[in-house]
Length: 523
Picture 1 (cartoon, rainbow, N blue to C red):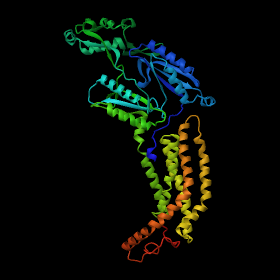
Picture 2: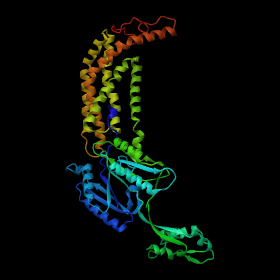
Picture 3: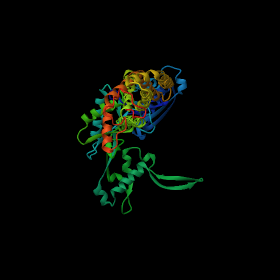
């Protein structure tokens, strides 16, 4: 049943702020972007529960904060949780929903509301991040843009996905400068000189440092602002020929306006586009990743592939490791008990009590619609110890009663009756101590709820079922397998020693229904 529960990595937490990523059409000026950022800031500032809004123009939040005139970013900080919890509709989900609705009215730009990741520094936002890549060696950015948008279109048609977007564009107006290499060589000018001149005049170039007024200043060379306003100004810039004369660039270059990608990103050295999105309400991040993988596999042409990054990469890495952790935890408990009881059979009656606790946790997760995330898995590992503890109380007393002369079934039933009250006392004391996690509020509430619900539901199931099933496991295992184990040990003893086999170790006629002497190995 646990394998059918939707999986997730870490729950989304209320960290007291969200990020707004503003994207205008390609080629939009900084002034136009600033106007949209101010409108978005006014809307965010009027949202209940918002304290401060900081807007920055010219930064693309979806491109690792790269400089871009048509992009902007806003940091929306909330009121302290102690203030917001006194009012309805000021939690993270309510603010997120309100901002998405109100910012959707700005038709001139695309504005994405980004919730910060659960672990700071791993990605720019919660949700998933996919990187479609061109892996066949070409740099066809038009194909990359078309494929990325095709994945987004198919993803938006899925009920399990929401808020898919990409910052990759190939339609930004750009100037392409073509150099007449033959003419340049005739004049004794290298192509590198032309590129250096354009880069220095239009951009800038570091020259030196000077000391002035007791401070050190860096010196950069750059053309005056009035000399680099329009594309035609490039023709008036000059480069030095081999004979010492200054040649205008207009005699060596041709300028064309053409569309292109304003930002080019590489992931693992491959050209890539970043696709971000979230799982829709009612679906887990594991289900969203699975759907995106199916869409990408059906959409990507030959020569292209995809990679997960940020939180999605971490989720894929650790998603299948929880089964190894469970197996190792159960094996550790079994080996410790086998050494303590000097038996391979009796510890099984303790280990079989673990699935009883998992039944309660699976039922709670399915009933409440909670994903099996990392904190839930920590709670499941804890349940292995807690469920084993209740079973050990019964098995220990059953062993003592057998040593006093009781039959296997009588000893198991008597041990269950005697330990019923201590099991209830210790279990409910633990459950009451964990209940605050189930009803947690504020920062980190989702993490505490995940581990609290898993532990409480599992302990309730273990407490109610252990006193019924553990005696049954103990009785069935000893009656069914104890004679076989006695015979096996007897044969081993005969093969390794010529002496008589000690009583209780190799007597093939031992009846497990008869209590053995106290010095025997209790199987």
